[in-house]
Length: 251
Image 1 (cartoon, rainbow, N blue to C red):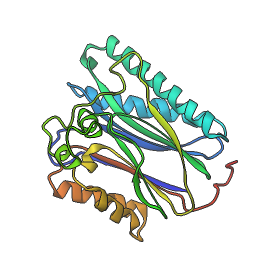
Image 2: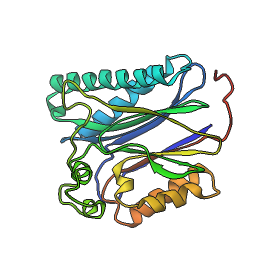
Image 3: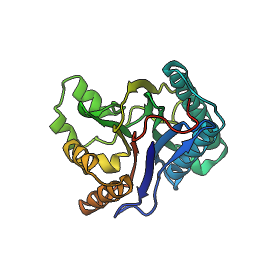
Image 4: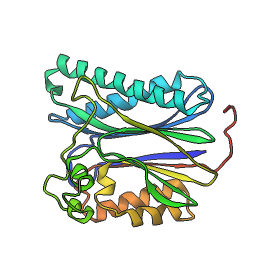
């Protein structure tokens, strides 16, 4: 199983509020996570970096996960714990008041992927059945689409497109959406912040993932295109390629 994380400040922002990483637990199981921070005085980067560090460190201390149920429970619990860490930090540090972050995290085993997210950072899957968006944005515009008030095309240009309904670090209780999906050999996952999805359409994302290139090159090419189209936001992504049946040491 291969994975690669890449992030870019973009063409407009003065600093990068995105964070992410790929981590392995004691038995070699993989966690991929992307966070897109928000908040004044650079507090967004504090929120996203704290999230990645906290979740990654905890993952590295775990042992093998055999069932989807225990994996989903771990993800849901760790994001609630992370939420509390962010709230406590903001209350103790005035410069971080109001900070928050989106997050999308996947635990990838040989047979299944557990996905958990809060906000509008996304997870997609490419397999024999095609290209699918796994997560549903926790955003005002997505709720308007789901309720039939606007179309998907309208959503792309809606003036309140960036309004989130959920984020880590903004409420005492946060309910992450968590699910498990199956995957097979040669499937790929894409985790990304909205700096990528605001610039590349789904069919373009799919075309990139289908390329017979190493995942590092694909990540770089996707970021380059997003920047060529304006790069107004930070751009972050992880590609996970299920290229082997089972990692050494994985149960």
